[in-house]
Image (cartoon, rainbow over all chains, first blue to last red; front, top):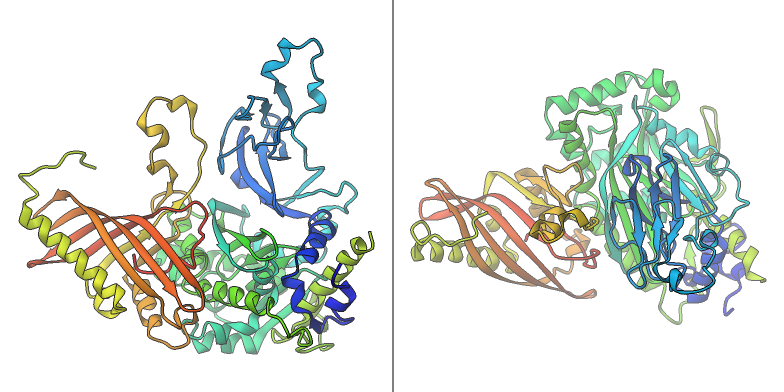
Length: 427
Length: 188
């Protein structure tokens, strides 16, 4: 190793070497120390409602088939034939009874079990098919319909892994009588950047909003964030940012949805729906969480949730210098179809590859990645010290809480990142 | 969608007028005259870019053209999926307004673009409106970034406006596998 991890991130993670985002050896350590051990987001139950439904997913660069078996259970398998390694599924989504390898037609059912080897009647000793199924992801669990997988059989439960992040995710999911659903397939955007750059942006980087996006975001929206915005680290690596609105605020100022152009242009049916949801917020999520007007969230290592514009995103690494950024529009499951079709635009008109705002973000990530690759500047690690030590407990909510200007979200992310990499560094 | 050219409804004059309209539109966009371009859009415009998905090819449809049709890959405005863009005039106007601000960092410095519009095919002709298809290649070069090629098809409804047209509806079908392009927020 060219770099020692203890030299890449300093003790309090206020200074981080440019190599954290650009060095190929560090990226290999990330694969083993993070992606080989963490809970990774695979998909939502609403994408695979019926037996035989499947979608593709990734765990880092490893392709995964997420499917629902005839038994109604969710399965996750590595999309690679046990015979010669080809992907056995080429479609992004669909419904099927079997996956067939193109090369020699080894045949698997949707749970990944090997059903037939066409050539095995011509040999004397038939291979034991029960040992040759697709490699199954050893742990799969879901919470509120969000399905995660882990390559580590010994990992703690998903609920423990999320920890107090559940309090903040639930503030959104539990607002709706039937939870949420994903609308259609993810947008898959390839960006010349390290995978952590989109993650950091969503994890808590509220600071860039008024500046990078000044051409689009009105000043009054930012004034509200400065006034009542909070940034929370529920557990190192996870993050939640939102506006903690005053108790007597008019419903349109607190309710989710009203700030997106799609909803504003969407008409009275949409407005009535949004008001109705907020009217029941206290009984569904309690008085504290009813006052939360979300911004962006992150779940370690690479899942993001943009509450304000209602998208889930996963930052799939493709080497140190490329990311395949997937984003889905998310809507309340109980909303009428016409309302869902309007609300999905809260995501796409501003975010995703066609979004008015996110074109600026992807530009920033690519440019930051360039700054991570230059020579003769290793004595200028990036400064992550804004507000260091100013985060602390809050009477109403769990975790370490601070203003949104505080970069605690990133310091705690990189402390966990450093710990994870150090566990595999010696080996 | 008509599969046959109807010389009775599509006169050479009409074909020429529609092509000239598209060439002018492309020139306005390449010259970054977005405000003038917005003037070509009807205030009731709906501008949609369907998502391009990768569904399972259904063996039950084998031997039929529908099996591998482009349509089944698209998540458009009427689908239960999510189009990449689905915008009324107000959002197009917001994009135009944004283009003329120095802090629109995705376009500062501005990109150099060149649009080639072709395969202009008039599908339906009415007294007030007509439907037309056209293909485009859009070369995009941005200082400090790189060179890219966008390709796709536009499915338009054009309103007649005297001897001229206004765009009343546009569906942009992009050709890509993953979106390996700087962004899709351009005017196509």
